[in-house]
Image 1 (cartoon, rainbow, N blue to C red):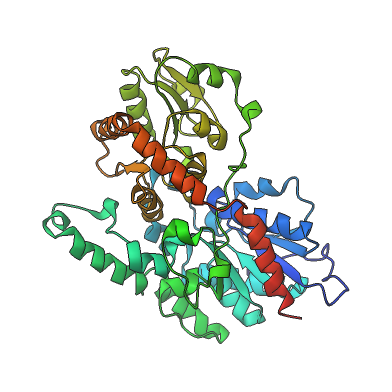
Image 2: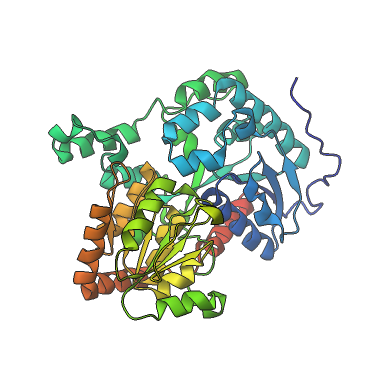
Amino acid sequence: MWDIVDFSHMSKKNEDASKPSVGFLPCFYSIGEALPVVNIAKEYTDMGGSAVFFSHGGKYEDLLEDFDADIIHLNDIWERARIDSDEFFKKGHKFYKLVKTLYTPENIRRCVDEEIKAFRETDIDMIVCSFNLSVTISAKVVNIPQVAVVSGTAIPPYYEEWATFVDNFKNVFTRMIPDSVMDRFIRWYLRNNKLLGVPSFNKVAPEYGVEKFRTYEDIYCGERSLVCDDLSYLNISPTHQFPEENFIGPIVYGDPLDFHPESVDEDVKDHIQREGRSIVVVMGSTGVKDIFLDMVDTLDKTSYNVIFAYTNLLSQDELPEVNENILFKEFVSLADVSKMTDLAITHGGRGTVQTLAYSGKPAICVPMFIEHQYNVENMVRQGTTIKVPKKHFSTEDMMEGIEKIFGDYQRYLKNARRVKDRLPDELGEKKGARRIKEMAAELH
């Protein structure tokens, strides 16, 4: 038998029936997935909304530390699947392997049963989630609307227009086929993917009286989607399933709209002010240790003033000896430091790329996953960024990109500032909260 969730400490929905209660179920195993939902929820409650939080576990539950909200702990699906999320994302494993490992029929049933009980006991009117795919079944059983918070580069309108064949899947055989043919194939495949989790979900869904799913996107995008991107930034058109009002705009860590120099350490400021070009390198938790060290070794031999944020990729004991042009920091505020440096080198996470877009500075990006690749290519098309594929990464390619940008810096800088000027002047969490409030009001 599975553990029984205890709801005895929970109060029922607000007695005012005209005030809907909204449940929020972020994926607390990824800051990129958790942060948008938490930020939307905070704005929603500031607007007077009633919120209840649910969690299947994850270290980023600490995003709620300063948020006065109840949290219902459900089963930890990652722990049950024996997946170390830090190692998984750090090594850049293939996404389909994650979905297959996490969402077995047994795990789906376990999640659905606990979610159904939790949603009924707390009497919520709507559930807002991010990468908790089992909600696509449980919400239908409880008969409440589901709203999935998703990335703009992970929805069909983007795939159909801009998807390219995945760099990490390229090999000797695929290189013999024209890129245009491979790109057409991947656009068809992504839009009609019936393999990624679909067999497991379709085995379970009928047991709960839920219709089978046609593709993975039917599971991922839910009944409705809030898209954490701007339409003009993505260069796509709205559709019936993805209307203009549901593109809420970027939601990133920190405040990319304002510059906060007081948040930047003095040694970082001093390092940036040294004579010569300045670079900040932030690979985050998804970076690969060997690639990071190769970057250090190569840039150590240049005259560029480089700040390396090593986060959890290295321990302090593992930091190599370097020349004075290199500065190691465990953490830097990319939103602020990128505005002060000439160039950023990073991965392709949605929030990271959007933060760089708001900085108005050019970048070199090494995408780790398929979504990273599309985030980066979106900026490449706008002339602000150079992509260096993770597969067969070479520091020669990285240096070629750096020299190309610095050799024509004013053009790259002009392009980056043009992108910045087109981005919304209101953060996505505010618009997202308003949309949730509007959707919830439609229920009463």
